[in-house]
Image (cartoon, rainbow, N blue to C red; front, side, top):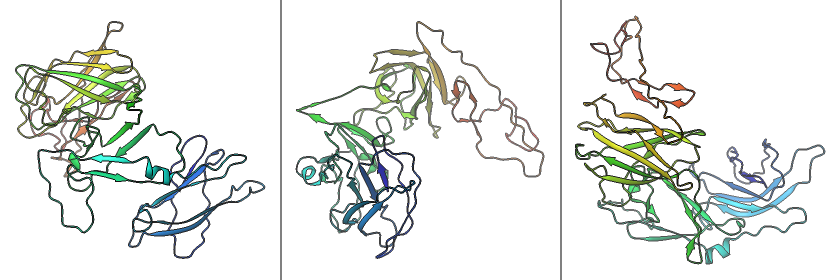
Length: 388
């Protein structure tokens, strides 16, 4: 169950198994949530028979003296097999001298719908024979309804998928992929509502245009992910995938400049980035020529001294590189080399042939996970009583 107040949402509270024809009491500990205006209750549809018919919920704040009980009549199935096939319900709570917020199920059915489009893809998919209508199928439009306590004027929708089932890589909405191997690698999108034929787009900090130039002598691109992590005064971004913005486009061709749109979140003033390539068999490397970024919100442009090879056979034989931001008002941070010594113990069987990784932390963030693969000491690595 989730209880909503005038401030924000709380995390869901989990309850044990609820049996047939039972009235169960629970005590839950919450912060001071202020005046309640609705609750949300549901289940995860797990177990052999998850359908549940909920009759009533009663709430009472355990103060001294106890406050008056709140009675909420539900009389509804929370089930994928009954009523509207929803396993969650929102119930408005009557507030002192205020009108009860309406349940907008009927109006939402008539006016608001969420349309999801499956795009044409270059590969085919086969679905197992089942006896229900398939959703999210190639070139199909699907429509859904949901019931919710009044949200006021709708302004955005957050949509995502869990990565399960066949064909998840081909799912996209409003010309954006929801795929960890396409666009920016995200499987969640925030969509802005369109009012009177135009979208009320509001740019926020953390939205970037990125231009990446590949050198002329770089090998032809291969099936290798290129990723970016940004570091700023307020923290760092997630790992962001540098992938084509349109279907069929091939990035990182020799001599080409590619443009990407990414979202880092508000991480403050960016002071460095880390660019990585996957360690795939047969990968010949990538010669990065230049890296430039522009924040959409401020139009601030950042450049990085990034001309280098990301390769296991050239230059420093690394697939991970860090670059400090270069701007006119501040000297860029120096790039240091660190020597890491690993001493394997002298016990019998202490050696290992596994891949070892290290992350170094400091006042300005971390190095990210780095694979220890090129020892300065000759011989087999990570052997008994040996320092590399």
